[in-house]
Image (cartoon, rainbow, N blue to C red; front, side, top):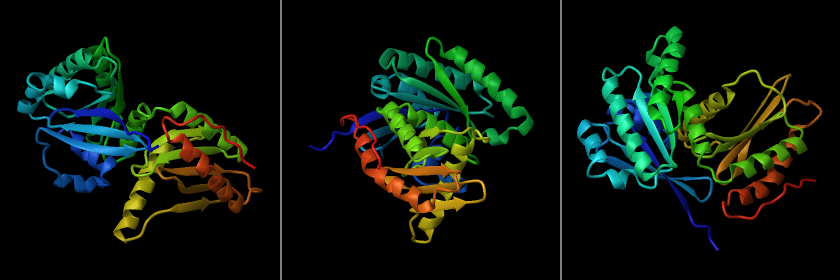
Length: 313
């Protein structure tokens, strides 16, 4: 019997020009940052369905941010827009000259969410941070985060600083998508078992189309806390370069005197990255282990499937 798609409604909101459609196009439509300049303003609401991990479908509502549209969302379209929302993502242009109006619209969104979808998760993206002087970014973001958390009460919001020009966009969207994966704890448990069985330093699981990190397990402490997002960004750009040459990216091995990293197709919806530092374990053994685990992790992606234990020989 085929699995029924599990749809999760995601609202993407914010004033016109804040960068909503650009970030959506980079994450879900394989745009590169410089190509987003040709995108026009969103008119009313643009709907898109993104299949994510088997039968999980993100029902993404990209809501145009012009004043007329925003007012309609809170009046005539209120129930339609804000009913059955799983996640609200509100995007703020950090250099907006109408901050008071931005905050007013945000509070109106929260009131509608509280009335129609009180269990929705709230994310605020303080966007275009690349336009802020580097030595001012931490201070400005901290101040904006404190204001947003205060305004969001009694709801809670998670805040991220973002830019389309670096890995911060992947960090924010990975965190958002992570909240939507229904069997993520079971996935993480099995990823930990897999890492321990093959004696890996670290294992990462990426969603295949977006290359967002959806799960990871590390056995050894790593120095770079931003490594996940950097890898997502680098490999996504490499995949796009391959597609322009009419080829497809399938796997990669990077090796030096300290470690070996393997990136390979894992399931129909994921890539896996395995990091090994034991020089006595040959590449062939790691690749065989990845291949042997594929069928097991395919089963885990079925949201309503039975629980399985990972057994490898």
